Image (cartoon, rainbow, N blue to C red):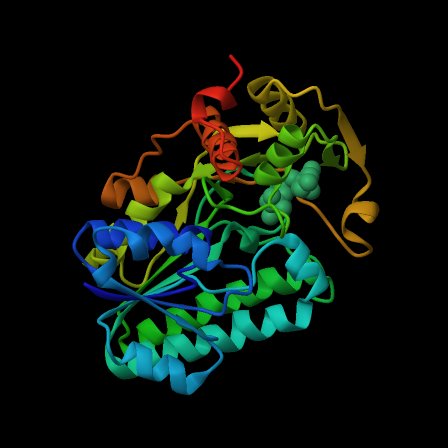
Length: 334
Ligand code: UDP
């Protein structure tokens, strides 16, 4: 495979880069480094397979650059997007431009150059549907598009609709995945993501900020389970034209997540509850829970998550310890 990974310097994209080059593929990364970081690619660029990776700094909204880069590959993993609830809340217009126009630009180039295409969409498209086990055909329950969270959900849903039409009407070989909350080493808490944020607070001895009641729950999938599935899907002919949930159905409330983090780090930090208004400003709506049904992915490629929630929490703690130079053994209390 000669692959282009848009957003390849991001959290998931950099792990996908590592995975593909380890499998003998060639990877070119296109990333504007807005939320991605060059350091995420250090293992790939400086490792034994470094000759098979290259990185170009640029935007997916730059049609000429995208065209030039897609022309050189046979496969496109489209991960570049505005990510994180804080980003979406504070840079809503830019987020929509990247997530709508950027995706259309990459999609169109993939079509013109005959490349296979994988779109990373999101569980946000289900909105406030609280079904335990959201199936890919589940109804979307979405608030006003004037609220930034739902404008994000709408943009990603339109990305899917666009991709689907490129498959149906233009014969593009494309597959779509809806990623549920994904965690692991390298994920930054700067843009919202709760697990790395709370771990950072626990390690710094600061209060863990739980928003709302903390009774809302999430399911966290480990990036090490997600990435191989993306690579397999794009090479699976029967996946073309379909959308797949990907995640881990193990639920945890945010209160319990904070408690587990405190126990595992041995932190003396307290847990504080902050109202959503204080955390995100006006116009924010949360969802009570979001649980994936991954049976479609299981049935097609045998997908089964191998990392438990505790594995994921420990991986994030170890990663943050590594960043400050402490060993993994010192990081986990009990
Ligand atoms: N959250 C929290 N404290 C934080 C960051 C997030 O309690 O410091 C909550 C957030 O309100 C949501 C959950 O954790 O209920 C997951 O948030 P995240 O932004 O990680 O993902 P998403 O809301 O997109 O699932």
